[in-house]
Length: 298
Image (cartoon, rainbow, N blue to C red; front, side, top):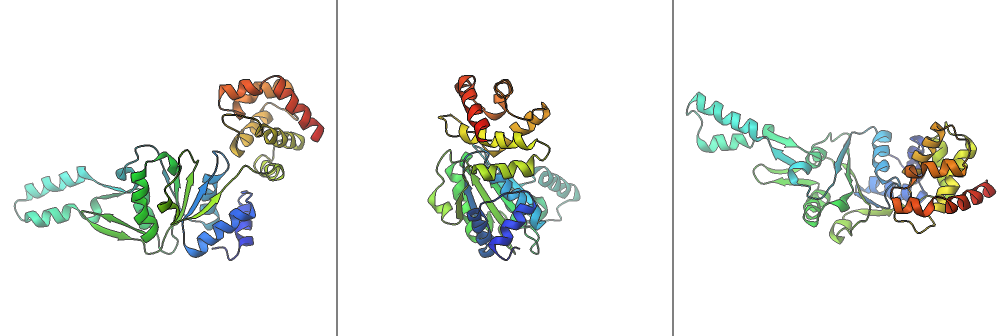
């Protein structure tokens, strides 16, 4: 575990994650005090990558729970292996009446019939090196699932009616993310440390491009960074995140571009922007204006 904020930032940087000091501070405190870290921000700003990077630098296993509307306990926490339970019943019938009904029922809800999903896996993990549990895009689920998480995040335990309570010998490292398509309940936020990840500054975005796209020409990286920064100032339905900047830089490099020009930008806007209305808004005169500003700045 890192022993300071500076060491936390250095560990992230070693895995090519450029973190602001405020994020490194939040992450260090969450690790030091054993609290979940709740990350909010627009899509594509690097929230999920925090958990992935942390798992790599700490050499821990990563358990990812991808949230979606209608997520059920059977997919998130556990379910019983009904097919194996039925087989056990058949075997007991073939063997004769050696087992009492109560004993057979107890045997059917033994740990060996329990299928562990990410939440239960995280609580059952190695106590010497607890895993990193990523609960990704929590805002896609509904409020009942949030309520279910309260026991896990507050007590590091999970209650299974037929079996009992499973408690973690050592709490997992928990990272929760949200794109803020809806508000997360205060009861859940209260159990976490909170950090908002914003779009990066021009200097930090250029640093990210230098680390993640080393094969791209230096001038192209600088112009991509400047163009995307200016693009985010426009009234768009979905502003591009860092993920889109990296994809665009990689695409332009594949097309042997060494700088931005009008034709190349207009032809590749679909890599950078994900809505046709945004592409129509930018394509043509607006793209030419941004390119002129970028060329002047670089």
